[in-house]
Length: 139
Ligand code: RTP
Ligand code: MG
Picture 1 (cartoon, helix red, strand yellow):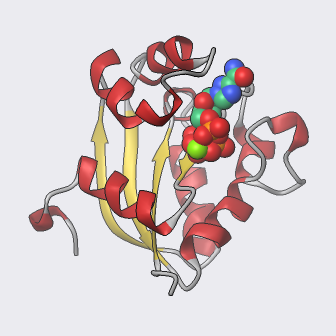
Picture 2: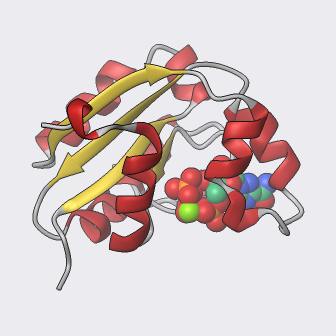
């Protein structure tokens, strides 16, 4: 059975461009409730751990450098069918392929600097939420 939680990050390009408020508004207007939220900055090492699943991919080193290049906002979100609905809201990885009205279509700068992260499964949503938040930090 699908859980009702997903995990997201507002990535360094979107945070530094001042788009965090507009993106958070789109997320809330799409029906997601914020259950945890944190402003933080990854190191290349912590970004590497978070994206360890991509360690064999050619873009891995660039991705770790990019994700540690500035502040990010991490959030746990709740909604029915959260993982799938959030992936629809953010759009395709490459903003050139993202549907009109999606967060990446509106805010992403490139396939790498693509504004937001969204978990790809219920299992990963739980793992990623726990990577950033203790039980005390979740409502
Ligand atoms: P995310 O995990 O961040 O939500 O993104 P995603 O599922 O849509 O894409 P994924 O394949 O998991 O890739 C993770 C992130 O790596 C960067 N990327 N760069 N240069 C490239 O070809 C390339 N491909 C992916 C993006 O930041 C992507 O979101
Ligand atoms: Mg992914």
